[in-house]
Length: 592
View 1: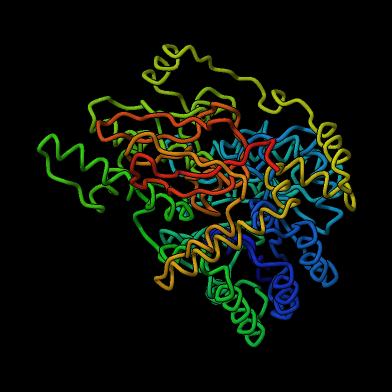
View 2: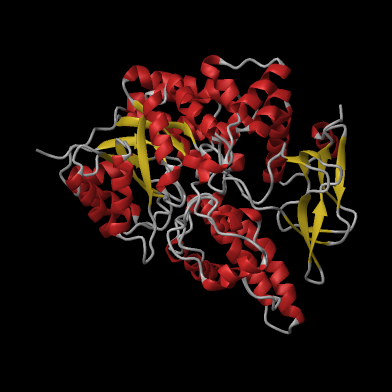
């Protein structure tokens, strides 16, 4: 009897791997029945990861969107699943236990059946609590192995983690090949090892197309017992996204597997609707480079979704590096030469910071170390000169245990700075927070929402939720959209348009010197460029706001003046600015 393979449509991740925002609620409601009519999907990824956050940034209530999108699939018997980042839940930094536990109750009530729990370090301590909370809430916990290639990421390494997660109650295992660099042979052996030991455990494979290995990996995992394969549809399939369901179905059908047929009429309608959403507004935030596959990704192991933001970083850095080289009488570097240097530096840095799997946010951290090393090496200052608190947090163990050993030179640098390494369970460092958010909801007269979903939203994404409630998020999104449209048309945003969206009481942050802007590195590079803070971020008086690389090669810290809320960014990452230029606008907390 032929092995039955089910397909999942990763509709959320299709968008997140391509651009900045997600479809609106009305668009999701329109396409859901067509996806169902395609008849080939046993599962659909409906939410999670950055879904809720980016919808807030677009001025839309994500809870209503999740409920609306899940409902038709629930009624049709198609399982829905979401992505969550374990300790970080749906954001880029750690989440208190009480907020994480509430998430599963909310998501189950909203109609999400399965939660895909992963940790960027494969530290089971960051996953196991979520398995418990998901089961208590009535969800199916799918625990995840983040796949990468290194001397320590072996069959035994992954099998041991799977043992611990299954023992903790995981009912499914996902092989998350986030960069598409997982070697098919290893993935096949890993699938077999898990299935032989735990035949009842469902295995789902998730592989991005990036460097081109994922189709071979799909065939290998299916031959060795996988049950579900994540797929995409045009016009967002392939590139840095996922293989198209048509090709996957054809390959597996001809290999003798029992796979569902595809209603091609419905496929073409879903394809047309997705293109309509792109043309409507989402396409203005899609990086064209994300439609391309590249075997260069194999050499650095970075996720394909990072390439757009990484190239923007590199473009800005190239000018600075070449200015330094020019002063030394050395030949300037082309973009291709610098890209190769960056990939080589990533390969150098990665083992020395303990081989963290290159997935959000740790892929960004490793890339950032390498990027700044290129500059400081040219300046004769050596490596590891510019590493922010987030990077040090990963190195010191505050985010969990890195799989490998930290290099002696980095340990020595930490000692010089007075930093201490820790092996503490990361989630124990965070005090519960729901009571404080309840107090804020009560003071503002805000409703907790159905099944406490609005309380949870505030607790999970406080700054974005406040901006959503005030209406500022919608204004910012419309401003971004207008600028993107004008840029595509080769036009400039008028002074009147810019002024209309700028907060009336915001204060400018002015460059005290000329140079090049460098922002704090943060955010979800798989969803959007990760080099600028989000609109609405709060700053304390005198807190570091950004950095300017001066013409004499030093970084000058620019403070956030009197502090407040970021309402507009005028200088992009790597932009050249003159003394007196406005970098951004901040609204003071007491402004009305």
